Image (tube, one colour):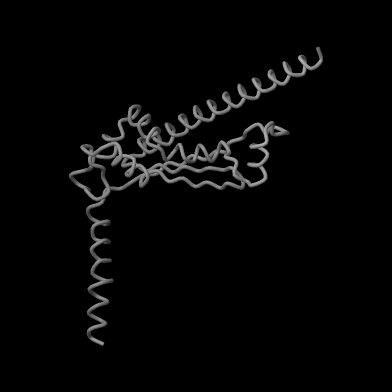
Length: 185
C-alpha cells in the first residue's frame, strides 16, 4: 500500500501542485473576447451541372461557413492579422515572466500559427451555421482587437465568396440565354 500511496503522490499530487503553483504565482492573466455570427448565403434553386447534383446527393458540398471555419485557422489569416496588429508583440509581451503561455517572437510563421490555434478558439455548429470565436490575449484591448480583426477579415472573405458566386451564376445564366437564343434562331 505504501508503494501505491507513494506512486499516487509522485504521479498525481506533486505534478498537480506544481501546475497549480505555476498558474497561481507565475502565469500572467489572460483575457478573452468573443464574437459570434452566422453566415447567410443565397441558395440557388437548381444545380446547373451533373457534378453539382451528385455533390448534393452525397452531401459533400462545402458551405461558406465551412470555408470560413478553415480560413480562420489558416496561415493566410494569421499573416494578415499579424501585419495589422503585430501578433508577435502582443503574444510575447510577457515572455520573460511567463515563458509557458507566451509566444517566442523569434519563431517562424508556423510557430505563430500553432500558437494562434491555442489562443483563438472556434465553436462552429454546422447544422445552424452559427460560429463563435473566442480570442485570448494578455490585455482586454488586445483580445478585443484580435476578435474584431478576425471578424473584419472573415467579412471580407465571405464577401469575396459571394461576389464570385454571383459572378459565376450571372455568367452561367448569360451562357444559357445565349444558347437559348441560338436555338431560337
